[in-house]
Image (cartoon, rainbow, N blue to C red; front, side, top):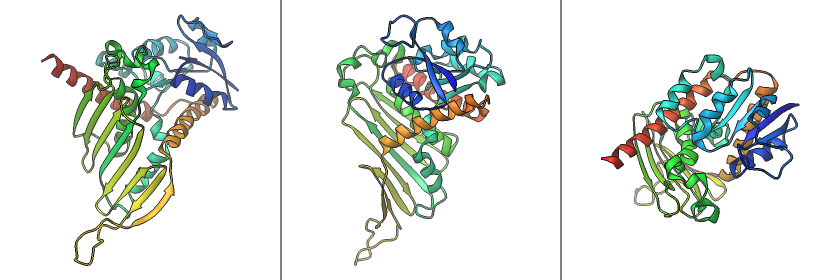
Length: 327
């Protein structure tokens, strides 16, 4: 049994707490907040209590991540699970890049879509004859969080510290997933909007990423109805993830009686919930961290380097948008 602590206690942190509580290999010893009193016997305002643990989960506001990482690294062999994004500016990114190899391998950043079934299916389709070759991916992930009462005064809506909040909390997962599968980004477009007029941070973002062989569009919003849909288009067909089903349409060469192209036939239809896949990937990611801590192992450096690469792209979006706004 390993002992864990967590920094944060609401919203996403609460999700992580429940996953930890259901893992037989770990016990959550401390829930840390620097000042608030939480109605939980595991609550502490003393950060030194966290040094008694084998691993710590950082689920605090994005701009506080580096501060906690640096403090926790002072305890030898303590492993760190940090929510994405690792940091939100170039100066802090350079600090992470300059950590020692051993320190880097003690940190795991939670890009949990790498542990999803969606990720596995993208990998399969990259080699499948159903699509032959993926040329475009379209992702829509929206819901109405910005219209909930608690959103207005939350850290997510605080434009001073989290201006690009929808990019940093939602879109970043899909950017990382695309980078993970398709490599270096050749060019990109980022268009943020504040549609709800709630708070001062952007609640909507449209992102286009151009890779060598694939173009991806990612639309995320806290100011829209609940929509979670993904479409992958290949030269020989299409795959859709929608309404709790994955549907494969293939082959391309399907004609009507006049010899005109018509939509490919549905080749298969199977149950697949993107919402459940997200929950499962989050559980898989936490379990991966717990298993690594339990074995007293270090994380593969590739995880750290991939996280840094995705974060660099996010910071580029921040800077580009800020430069345009100030010009």
